[in-house]
Length: 322
Ligand code: CP
Image 1: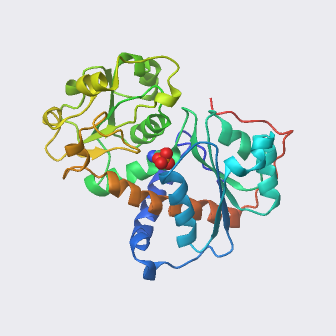
Image 2: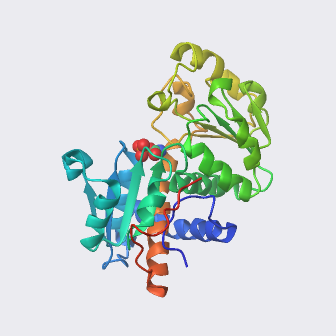
């Protein structure tokens, strides 16, 4: 049984299918409060976000509340982290208060693994550096599954800042595992050749070629905060050569889904008419994110009922992500 959700890499196909099916059951409860059954009244969840977030943090807090759990955020900017308290000490302190689930976002790849090895609580990775963002990929996969009915043979093109993207990595792990054909596109400075080893079909800087016959076009945010050097001349030039416009979209299938994990740089990754257009499922991704996070919290909590996790402490092996 599973204590933590740290990445899609170590999630089995069966677990992914289970979470998709569970998210489907939870989805009606997101918008209809009458349907909420508050099954997790004895659970408490804490968010521990060292990086900014709107979607991931809020949807975890709301997902927990829709399940009847206690949910609270440790505001890092007013916490003792600013007095120099370490990640592990902060996690162990929250753990000692009896929280059952900690959702962490951190700029370091492997931070969620480090925390998980040192606390009794279940740890959910809400994004660690450029490593993984597993619940984003799960909600993306849910959205694709709901709209397209499956994954086998689907052409999914991911366009943008691939090299710095934990969303890209988690989606590649998940989509390849489920049988989709993944193509990556973007400026060569933002593409990572070693992604071929993860099972992607094609890596190209020609966006028109990349989205030809695509069933799904997923844009990724240009993460200027993670780029150590200038990777393209300017945002307008990025938009001109690598952004997806309505004209560019004619290369994809006519019913291709437009997806983006958010936040979107309007007019950069996608033109505004595409973001707000009929093929866009960007806000449905957000709604599905709450349902999927309900499924993930419940999955880990049910696993806790079966197996009482052994306490792991700082002298245990620190399992890094890579
Ligand atoms: N997609 C995503 O992780 O968004 P936030 O940074 O707003 O959580």
